[in-house]
Structure formats: C-alpha cells, structure tokens
Image (cartoon, rainbow, N blue to C red):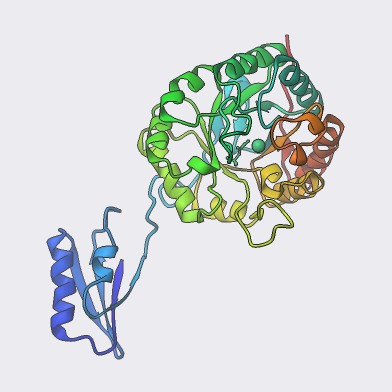
Length: 345
Ligand code: PEP
Ligand code: MN
C-alpha cells in the first residue's frame, strides 16, 4: 500500500504517516519525489484498514498495490478451482454446466414437470427456490421445507442435482440436507453471518453478485466462505441495477472474463435475472458462454404464464431446448462442451 502525500506536505505530516504505519506494526518507507512524497507500507498482511490514513493531515490518496482479498485471488492459487458435484459433474473445468428450473418450487406437479423438461433438454442441475427473497412481503414466499422435499423428489425421479437458496443463517443446515449446491442470493451477498455459516455447511455454494456490488465486493464476499474452510464456491453474474428500465437489470458480461482474471473460482451466468425478459435470455446465454462462463443458471417453467414468480423471464420448455442447442454450438466453437446429464438407472 502506498500513502501518497499532497504536494507541499510538511515533514511533520510525513512523520505523522510514518508513525501511524509503525504504530500498526508495519514498516514505513518514505519515497521523496520531485513533486510529492509517497510512503510505502511494507508487510501488509491484508488486515490494514486504509481509512486510517485517508484522514491524516497532508495525505492525498491511498494506492493499493495488492488486492484486499487473498484466498480467492489468482495470486493465491494459479490454477482454476473445479467445484466437484455428485455424479462426476464439475464446474470450472472444460464443461459448461447448465442449471435450470423454475424461479420457485410451486407444487409437486410443477417441479416434476420442470425437472423432466430441463433434463430432457440436457440440463444437469435443477434450480428452484423453496425460500424466496421477494421484494414485497405480500408476494409468494416459497414453500419452505415442503419445497425442499419436492426438490429431493425431483432429484430422485430425474437424477438431476439440486441448487436452492438459503435465505437465513438458521436455514442453512436444513437447506444443506437437501441441496447439492447452496445458493446465496443477490440480496444476501453481503449478509456476512450467512456467508460464514455457508462456509461451514460442507456443501458447495453458489454466490450471486449483489445488484449494486462491485467485483471486489463480490470476491470479498466469496472470501468469507473460503475463510471458513469451504473452497467450493461458484460465483454468479446476475445483472446489476442500471438506469434504464428497458431491461430489469443490466447484465454485466465483462464480469465473466474479469473474475477469471482476478480469481481462480468458477463463474456462471444468470441471463434470466440479468435481463428480466424472456426474449433476451437466449442471446445473453450465448454471449455468456462465448465470454467464458463456466455454466448457466436459467429459469424454465412448464407454464410461464402461470408462474408464481418471475414468469416474464422464464423460458417455456421448448425455448429452453433451443437454448441448449445453441449453447452446445457456442461451447464447441470455443473448445468447450456442455455437460451431459448422466443416464438414470
Ligand atoms: C433466484 O435465483 O431466483 C433469485 C432470487 O435470484 P437473485 O438472488 O439473483 O435475485
Ligand atoms: Mn427468480
């Protein structure tokens, strides 16, 4: 970390910065320049609170030489993390893993129909919320544990793996009993007690980017899970709050190569929430694979017009089958493959 002094900072102000650095147990190295002096902080162990220096007299700005996150960074681990799921499914390797299903689990008939449809089209993971984070308290909140039981039943029938959201720390153990991947939703990306709990759950996690979160904040949120001893984390780009209501969110494609550059963790794309518009899902799914996404998270409903949540962005089964066809084509062009479902015995 470099503390850059203002032009004309006094010797006393520079001494003040040096003293603050030394007081925190680090070494200070002042570099006098022609225009201004910078003071280097040596021995940064990632615990330095830069805000301490920002308010000191004579300080112009702080320049971070290293990233604030550690275990999630490429510097920490050069090779890609491959999240290994039951049945040999791997996220972060050569395969593009497609996770699909309804926004919410609504009934046995609905989730079984959705599971069969997405499996027949080639998905390997079934998504579906049992605990739903809804903007309005009057909207459908999910079936809770009953929803988890129905997901388990769908897994039994189809062989699909399950990804589903834990909304509260208290739900994590329950969700972990049913899920193959525990989802942390966008609204909870910075719920640190939930992240810590998920870090101790012993199951892979899918961490969705918050609707106004920077990439650094996303990676620091993942750091919470890794710091608790769980390296099995899949990140998810799901769109940001933009200024234009033409789409529900602004799907940030650049996040995919950027995360790959900064981190060894896999990242999947959710063009359903990312756009909020059914017609935009297939083009953005194609783009996400082309950009290097390690998987897709797609909302599919057997009857989107009757969906209890997110119907406008949900694909009907035939549209999802078309998405899969196109996804295979794009994956092949970039030397990857869309993961195939295992044979059910
Ligand atoms: C979801 O996956 O249905 C969901 C609620 O997503 P997000 O947290 O990204 O809004
Ligand atoms: Mn949804």
